[in-house]
Length: 250
Length: 250
DNA sequence: GTTGATTTGTCCGTATGTATA
DNA sequence: GTATACATACGGACAAATCAA
Image (cartoon, rainbow over all chains, first blue to last red; front, side):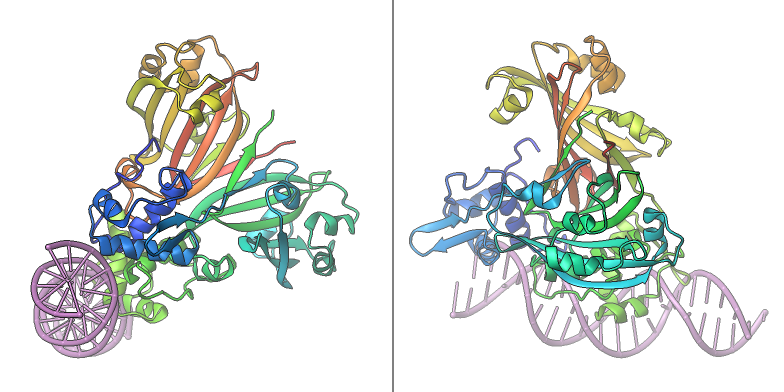
């Protein structure tokens, strides 16, 4: 994007209400600093002229963003930006979740939502190089930073090799530390597949997103030093709170 | 995502029309094989019951997906999936666009939409390690595969070092080949930053997307063998047609 | 070849939400 | 706050196309 900024015209009868289109544009413009760079939004009348819509429509958009925590409106003073920086999540051969985000947030927390043993689907079996139907451990986890949900992950591990992994994770809240209990002192990110889609109902609830929000989906395989797959994971990131940095050092 | 499949309830008065929410869910379910795995969709009545809406609402959603080219409806027979595989775009130290996609498509085409010389913004200057305001060449390009737009990129190059780059690109349609004309036989992807957002008006037009669509945004810096930045690029991918594969070989 | 079941396509009317003036 | 226009969503009924018994 060069600087379409706020020029982007809103589209009628697209199935997306004007106020929501404007809210989306404003959220993005605020994020890129095109709008409210000084922490303050132009008056509603000015915005309505820029977008070519009625002032009521802009008010609906602002109300939605206030609800989201992006803006704060004060009667008689104006509308202000609640500044929140986007987290950068690194993807590299040595990626460690906690290490990567440690410097960017004061309060980080990982929660184990659920764990179970199940037969591997063909997708999971292929990734972990197991025979289809072999028992695998599934972990459902949630990561928060400064009180806001950041990512929601589903991980699979070979049940035979990693019996009790869930208990280890529950105690340490760390994949790295849990692997250590199984004699794995080091491991590597083998491959990562990144895509994006609209958040589904589960994402909306877990990550506390509003309908229409976007999730970045990273499907990753981690391997031990011998190159054997030890973890298969699908992580959904709230796209408006996170960006992924891929450092490819040859 | 485990298997929320089609259970996800639709949200009323959220600013997003029911038919669009359903269309989005169906597009995703089709992509993951949860829906229409056999190439055929359940009847409209069955779908309307699963989503808890009127048959007409499901029909609106189907109509949108037919328009997008995802589905094909035949009176009296049923609704069928127009199979189209998602392209995998590789990101690694040696990423070459054409090389990466060569095996996946029959017909690939890159078009130069525009080129100009302009003073570097602070963002561009920082990435290319130039002094702010130094002249840079900007290229606006579009990539298509099998007749469908895949990505839309904006690239910047140091104007002094790469005078005439646009002409070289116009002739070769290849960044790699153009660099060769400036004595650069090899170059590397230094870093890539991946995020996702709703497509803006320009994206909708260039990539032929429908409102509400998602773009994956990759901001990359390429360096020559000496480690000097030679290209700064922001590429917008149509998220429903592309996924990014990050191969991190240690 | 006919009949009936299934499935998509079209039309009616009505209620509610959205956007403008 | 009121009035108006349009898009969205629902419910029902029937037509048109397809397929199998």
